[in-house]
Image: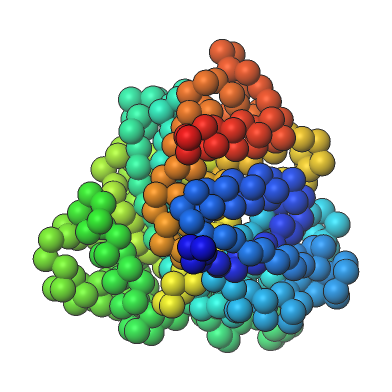
Length: 365
Ligand code: IPM
Ligand code: MG
């Protein structure tokens, strides 16, 4: 009998539409991996609001332990109105932030790719976005989202809020290397985004990126202030290939870039550690307003499973097979409500998931 490779994936469906889209991503993941000779073992655990309700906190110890022991984590979404009133340190989002720091997932890859059949769904004119293919690389475990000290105190009879924007040069260097590597494998262009005209920490960012650039003579490096980058993204987005930036600027710019593609429901992401382990999640949130109604678009989570195969399991052909199956389903005119137009056939989560799985099975024959 031939030797089967087995890999362990921890599944964290979370809240809202997370549990609805996850079964399809898993079915597609297992099928594509099996076609490549790899068996995926899955286990699941609680995260987010459901973990608060059932285990008392957004990231139970057991979840983090299982995540650390896995080859990769597939994540749905967290949050919902039921938990909106909780203090910051207890909110469902803490589950995600805790996984990012607990697994040292410092490199967040957010592709903004326009699927040709969806050009009309963008908020920009289709000539500005057709063929759009940007990769935003966001530093994910440092910067102002994690900096200490932080808090709100009362001083001189008024409240004062503060956060700390801090980067060590080793943190900048490792994310810069990921970005140069990725740019080298794509269009060869890297734009580093900072606010070096105002913030010392981002002047250091710029200096370290320039120092790392010496090792990547084939990559064409440019720098841009974040305000200009926001403007350029909506003015002429195709000027960008790979963008690298810190945690907060990356959070904002990746939402802008996502909108250019027409639907948040289409966009996957990967958060990687230095050891190749990764957490894969759709860019969209838990969408409580449509949860439980068979309306959610499962494609972002399905495409996140493709990224998992590519980056953590090193099965690029299996990843390609999933992306091509999604392309073919869209080309046939199937759309969930978020990307529907007059000519398309609007389907629910289940029908979209079934269609991708069927295309994948056909593609393998
Ligand atoms: C994201 C989200 C998160 C972040 C929230 C939910 C904590 O906006 O992944 O972009 O700010 O990183
Ligand atoms: Mg965000």
